[in-house]
Amino acid sequence: MRLRRKRRLLRCMRKRRELNVKQDATNVIQPDDILLMSVIRNEKIRLPYFLDYYRKLGVDHFLFVDNDSDDGSAEFLTQQPDVSVWNTQASYRRATFGVDWVNYLLRSYAHGHWVLTVDPDEFFIYPFCDTRPIRALTDWLDDTSVRSFGTMLIDMYPRGPIEETPYQEGQNPFEVAPWFDTGNYMISRNPTYGNLWIQGGPRSRVFFYETPSKAPALNKIPLVKWDRRYTYVSSTHALLPRGLNQVYEQNGGEKTSGALLHAKLLDTLGDKAHEELSRGQHYRQSDEYRAYAERLQDGPVFWNEWSEKFINWRQLEILGLMSKGNWA
Image (cartoon, rainbow, N blue to C red):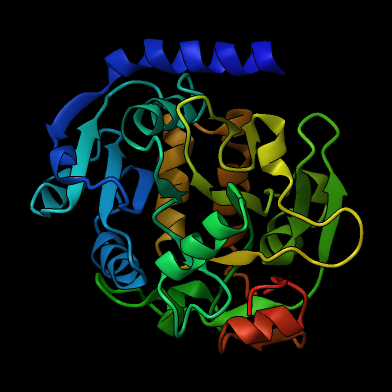
């Protein structure tokens, strides 16, 4: 594993040549700032609410890689004083689906910082997030010598077909898509990295009902007290050193954990699926986006009698989808 980690670090250093500075505001980053890292392409419609959400949560500075957007995403981001942006026209797939770029920027700017690494359709929630800023969580994690914090990705969806409720730029996506699956999740342990592997939810039952083993993974470790020796190896599903993946309790009880509310199942998904199919830059020859494009032609409805409307984090704790553990 040590050799594998070193190879990942060498790889990300080589891939740094693919990144071109669009706006570098990293000189304003303070030693105790909380950072956010994200790789985007054509996400202008999501960015205003995304930035507003995470600023209110307590993020101090944003690091973005823009993968050759043509919708004004990069131009919008360069107007933000707390944002640094790098542009690349290089292959997302050949950069290990963006992980190489992420590892390089985290190694360069996030050493010693708590950093959230999320997609622009992922919204981090944690115990007491309605009353405590994210710094309260990171301070507690520091006090308890915890270096990484796990979450489950929870796909959110509207009551009817996604085309019936258009999403508007700057809107809270969960006004449009407030529903989620309370069950239908499968959990196993990855023997290689020791991380949990979770699948299921609405994407599994609607897009991958014949092949549930091919459904997207829902386990993520987005919040890490970064060290330049660390590296993500598969999106934010797993890290090296291997101990960073132990975000769950192995001997009974529950570790504190959070969730990522996933705003993917909106009316924008159809266009996104066709764009990514034509680019062919995603995992397994973009099979996931092929399933989206094909099934969306039938106007599927994700809601069913077991769906529940999201209220707050306590609801997810009761359902066992996150835990406050011993953080009181």
